[in-house]
Length: 349
View: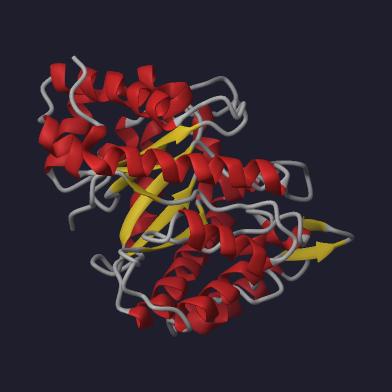
């Protein structure tokens, strides 16, 4: 699957209270790879962890919080795995109460001319970020509960499969991001999980999603061991914060070379989010990204390959900002995409 040079998409969350207002921005600024917006300010159920918690065993919503209650653990797990065995995708759907943006996105796609749409972009919270955000009754992260970890891996994969199955209707190639900001702590004192465990878990996760149904990508907005993702056969796209961590990312040139040669795509999160000042422009961001590309070329990666397998995005989600700032960031994203795709992204070395 070839990605057009400079194609822009979003990372997921927007700060709007109204799904249609959020979608107006999506289709205005990233019409070729639109995405469904997560709206955490609309409802706490749209937070990136709670949003994917529906129908998982032992997880309950109480007082605006997600609580782990293992009182009937065996019974709930038995019922849960019956749904898994029966491949009951509908059981794992994201309801409108938890994902208003998804359902309005689906309705919008049904009622517009799809010719400008090259890809439809979906997302799911990855198993590490999900499990590291919930504690058991003794205060331990569910990441360290092997029984629940297996259940979460299967449930989150089913939730992504449900999305892919739903949006297949439109006949457009699908990009699906697995959002794993927690893996920005990989290798630090804050994370005891090993590299091997990360690879094994994500490999199991991606194997649960039929290959060919979607271009699976990982989004991590922190610095991490990027070879974890390049070494995973099921991952075909890597989305990273290119504004802050480009110099770290290019250190993995040899891993990235093999990844790209196997058909991989790099999505450069070149438009700043937390650091956004409204003084940046498309030429500045493209020049900054070009420095990273030139470094990779010098390290032996074919320039043509880097440019053909290139997308751009904001560095991270926009759900915590005000709507005006979110629109400014998306506007700059669109302008940077146009700058690149109009051929002004020539070699600067």
